[in-house]
Amino acid sequence: MIYIDNSATTKPFSEVLDAYTTVSQKYFGNPSSIHGIGMKAEKLLIQAREQIAELLEVKSNEIFFTSGGTEGNNTVLKGIARTFKGKGNHIITTTIEHDSIHKVMEQLEDDGFTITYVPVNEYGQVSAEDIIKQIRKETILVSVMHVNNEVGSIQPIEEIGRFLSNYPHVFFHVDGVQGIGKQPISLKKANIDAYTISAHKFHGLKGNGVLYIKEGKRIQPLLAGGGQENAFRSGTENVAGAVATAKALRMQLQNQKKKMSVLTQINLYLREQLARIDGVSIHSPALGKSVPHILNFSIEGIKAEVFVHAIEERDIYISTTSACSSKTNKVSKTLLGMGVSEQIAESSFRISLSYANTMEEMEKVVAAIQDIKEWLRGVMK
Image (cartoon, rainbow, N blue to C red; front, side):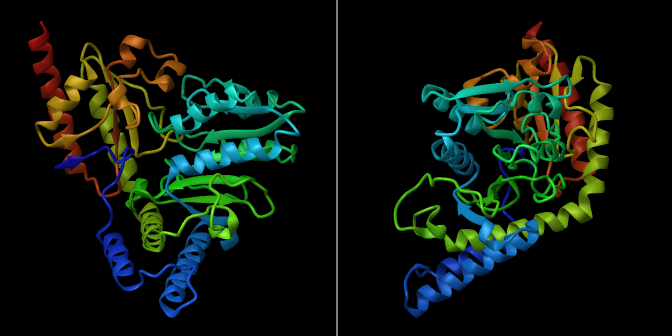
């Protein structure tokens, strides 16, 4: 099997599964309980929080465990809106955000908030200057993704953060789901107030996530209840999931340091080989403007869904758009925002790599793409 749909989800590291199983079996107590089993679970939870904080170079009291990216994004956006609605009702985001941002913005519009959607350029990048130009007296939040999930474009997060340091009343949220472990960033230097992470995007387990919130920033919680996570995220903590997430993040960041150059070479190989195939258009911007692990391309005249199933017959797994919208047959709003025609966007595919993929695998992928393209065009004549 050649799995290259890692932006949708990743295969968990075996060490992560072992950690989850061990904690679930031996340290199953409720960390809020005062007996010995509960206290052992609480100790593991504290250690996992401290480990993640160290990896992100932040404080442990700035780390909150969630169920993943969607909850993290909803928590920040709705929490900021509720907390500061008395001070302002204006929010700034981009036209290419993940649906866990975009759909929340639609809900907030129904609640009376004004949303400004800043467009991107032909590289799928937003301009920091364009973001800042939209700030008003009533602006309370700017939310911009770190790395686009469809084409891999890197947003100028640090530049936006520097500009926003002049607007202390504006909260800066970054959706880091596709960025963490793949694109270096300093949360402190970038002046980020909140950063969302999802474990299953870096070989952790589904249903686990992390939300960084800068110390001193106040957000109303999305979930009320027993007051866990320092009264910010109620509900019995998933201790095994937290431990597994810490291990997955550490391993992913180690791979980032050791294997990024290999991943870059694989990306360059794919770009070179795909560009030689008649009818192929590459949409991901050049490396530097995009990350090495995502490559978006189109094959003119080929229906995306048909191609995905055809290449699956060769035990190769790619995707069309993001996993959250692939089954709805929606045309990529990111590609349309970049100026790609709807017809070409309908035939787009996403290869998303992990550090485990090899050059030998990609040679097979390129050969399969060429063969299947010729076969499908023959069938469709």
